[in-house]
Every structure is written in structure tokens, then in C-alpha cells.
Image (cartoon, rainbow, N blue to C red; front, side, top):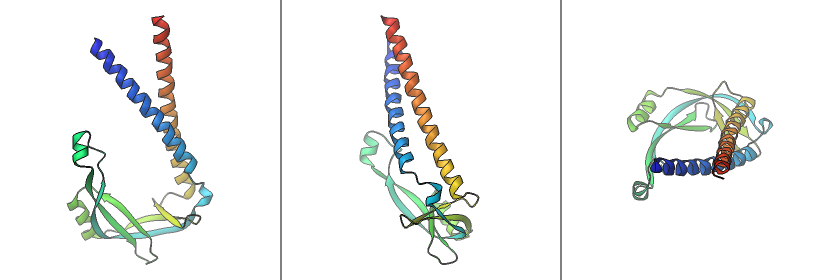
Length: 169
């Protein structure tokens, strides 16, 4: 029984720290988020896969010694370019090397909406059904959910902690 209490205590503190970190991240993301007016809709483009390359990314799936021994892992990115030759590119991660090669060999086109960010001189691509307004609304909704869920957990944790402390006295 004592071991279960100590595990619960440690797990509660870890979740408390995680929730506090998620609040910080969601506030930072929310403040850096652009308004829908900051995007300029360039229309829907057809993108064609032209190459698949292995890319080294941080190994976040491992822990402890395994992460120290293997700090990076290889993922396979499929690169797309628009068929009009305007220079827009898009990439997505393939599940496996073979899957990425098959996508490039098939050459199946993908439609994406291009949203330009003139203030930064960059662009993003989104699903063709999305607009700048729906994209920013979705990002705000995601950040709001993270903020509310993390804040709710922190509030729950503090309430339980106060109740247990009062009961001990």
C-alpha cells in the first residue's frame, strides 16, 4: 500500500510538471500565432512527388541509455513540388522507406492550398478545403484545448492537495 502511495505521489508530480509545461507552450504558441489577415491565399496547387530522402531527426521515442546511445533516428521524407513550376514545395513523412519509394514511383498528385505569409516571406500548405480563417481557428482551438486541459489538471491537483492537507490536520 505504501508503494502505491509513493507511485501515485510521483506520478501526480510528474503530471503537474507536464501540465505546467503544456500551459507555457500553449501560451507561447498562442502569442506567436498569426491572425487570419496575415495570410494571403494563393489558391490550390497540385503537388507531384519527385524524391524521397532519409532525414535525421531527434530520437524522442527512446529514453535513458537508448536515447543517449541513439540521439537521432532516420525518417523518410517524400518531397513534392507544384506542377505549375511556381516554386512551391511540400513534404510529408512516409511510414517506411518502401512506402516512400512507392509514393514517388506512383507519382500520384496531391492538391494543397498555399497560404503565403508576406510579412515573413514564407508560405504554408494546408488541405484544399481549408482557408486562412479555418486554419487559424483550428490552431486556436487546439491551443485552447491544451490550455484548458492543463489548467484543469493543475486546478484539480491543487484542490486534492489542499483537501488531503486539511484532512491530515
